[in-house]
Length: 336
Image (cartoon, rainbow, N blue to C red; front, side, top):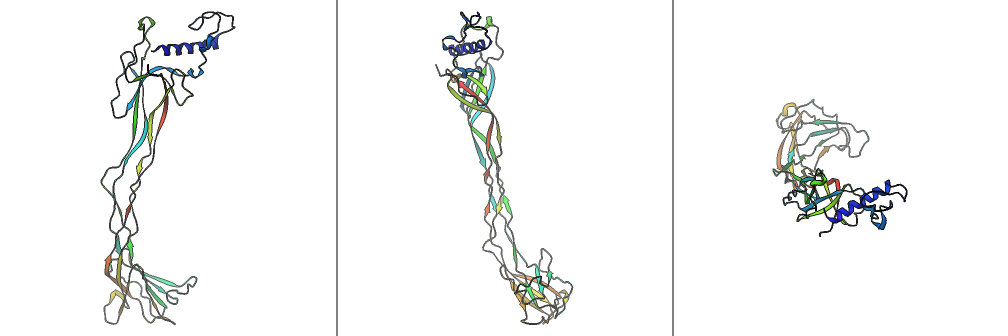
């Protein structure tokens, strides 16, 4: 322990004596009391910033990637280990998109309105004539809709199923890193007075003599002005966002839906008709007046063109933060 530390401890003793002394003409004992009870005479206890600090320790700090030195033999106990200079190391896996898929139309809508409700009649009359989902185009037979009972018929458009995101095999790396590590060494159990060396050993290279205290206290004492802060505990919410896929682009899905007047997709000539549709067109057929003179007995479908296009991947971005708790403040003496 340096002579400055001994002076600091003496000053602390003076402040305690100042609180416990009685009248000014009383005699007291101690390092500050040579005569009348005036422990802070000559301004030796003016540094009130010295109050509340733990006794001096030997503090080392350095590169987090280097091994911390061991404690000296006369201060063998590690009383603190912490870090500073926190940041994040994050790596996220790659993202790609599986293919989209062309889907056949969901079926037809049978309207009892002019040209598939072109006039936007409120509460229109219609009957869905739908295929199973998904539909492979095979024959669909439902209850026959007789002729002269509806005014128009709408063939629904083809659609695209979305691309599925694929997360790459690379591992997620989301961990805190720090620039500086610190280690404080203390004497541990104090030896009896008669076993102490007459003079404290010199401070080892790389260490500084420091007072210390939990939290973020006020200013450092005047003779220990070098302020350092380190942290014991690290918390993190680092992670990666999920992979996603945009809408398919450059797609072309053209199908032919055939309408049969009879059940079971009877291919007798004159008993069926067909209509082509794509991702945009949902064609409507009907009469300018009156009802349609055909019945609906069944339907099937086939592909003309299937080009589902591609999707742009997105996501897998690093997010979150890292923060430190349990701050400890050190006030260190200048190097001698």
